[in-house]
Image (tube, rainbow, N blue to C red):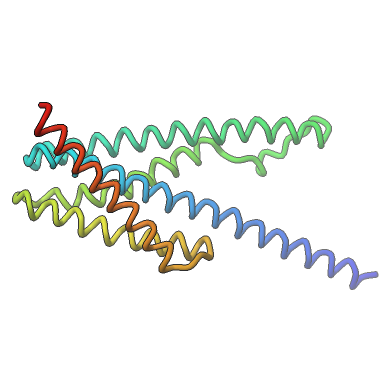
Amino acid sequence: MESHNSSNLDMEMNQEKAFDYSKRAQWLRAAVLGANDGLVSTASLMMGVGAVKQDVKVMILSGFAGLVAGACSMAIGEFVSVYSQYDIEVAQMKRENGGQVEKEKLPSPMQAAAASALAFSLGAIVPLMAAAFVKDYHVRIGAIVAAVTLALVMFGWLGAVLGKAPVFKSSARVLIGGWLAMAVTFGLTKLIGTHSL
């Protein structure tokens, strides 16, 4: 009887560890995706502005505005999403536990919002730092593309490792997607900027 209880306890502990790992992996993947989003959207915005305005100050200001707007948007979206999940889980706990709520098992909307904003900001800082100290326009564009390329490969690799996916395919997909976003933004803005404005 004692060995049966001990094996049940071991099984529960193993399930708890697996659950904790799964939760941690989900948070890490969300952080990588948030950072990738900040990286690509801010770099694309800077490239688009750079297509029509070669001034370093204008590119940096547009990138900074993109960082702030994106981080706020991500935080608000995450807060609303996780708060909805929180409400659903509270209602379910009340039904299952006779009105009792186990607060330690509930998601934190504030924590999720802060993590999302931070992840986006960390990604967005890469193109800003790459462009910040480069006066020459062509070198600045090259520096942004090089820094973003390196970060995209790193985020693709990290996402693949966390998701247990093929590393090369995942990195290539993230890299090509990022390049495509920057190229399309640069090209369309240049087209509209030179012909319409």
